Image 1: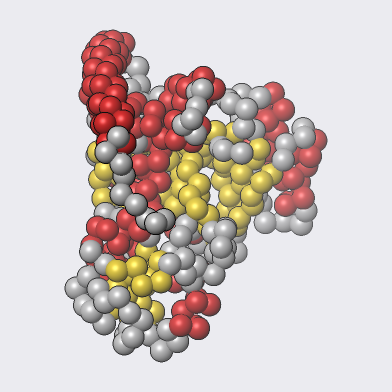
Image 2: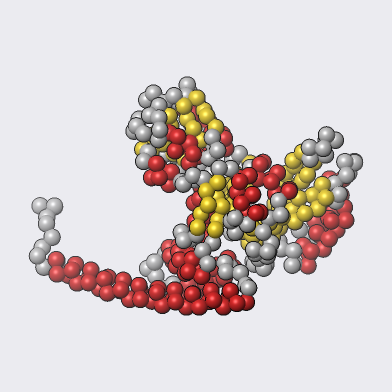
Length: 369
């Protein structure tokens, strides 16, 4: 027969392997606690010296070092995930990091925060990106995580507007592959009266909704997770959200990956006050983000681009937002490839500053290739 029970001889071999795993787990636990004791001592030194507790560049260096030294069979990305959690847990012993995110539990913003800070971060759930900025600027949170751009729907305009007037700056970013799912109390598409989600998510899934739920109301809410929370209160409602929200609110995933674009990514910015963390040092790949305005006159936009061309600085993003002065003036949000500590970038920024009526660097930070 093809399907046979394991032989009696196989059982002792499996038991022996499990004993080996148990012994290794015990050794790992001892070593992890030894590392944690050293981390506590590091925390005491940082307190005395007044140096930052969280150093994302140090986290990246340690993870890269462990991945390079990895002999296998663990995959490099899994080694990275494991070490990020180890370092997050140890950092929590030194000083728990308070991080403001868009709530409730189960948002992609929460997922981005965990990817960047690890699962031991103390997350503060906010009802809007306005509240995330306020919590970070006021010091009730040390860091904030806000969405800034989606590959299919473009920039998150409210985040751009808030950068203009906030004292916070960007020190890092996370790019998440977004998979939207239709969630519901009932495991069926029948009799859905309303679909609840963040406006960006509704826009990213409009073709699917047109085809499968053409008569359902599309109701915009503050976050996808908030939509899931509300959908858990009414069997006639459905939500568009990620798997974390499904688990958090006990909803069925009625349809997987309902976003219109298969390769749907969203960028999240990590923000903080400059006194919490200064701009990270230059790496092999960095982005400098700034906000500028120029006099409303012929050729002003052309003049703005000349310093970049002259010094060989690549512009990777350009967005405009109305200045709301009543004069048809605009602020321009620009991402540059490079770091202000690099001579060619510094020279271009210096010349740009002279041309601009308003000039503000809102961040210089490492990005993933």
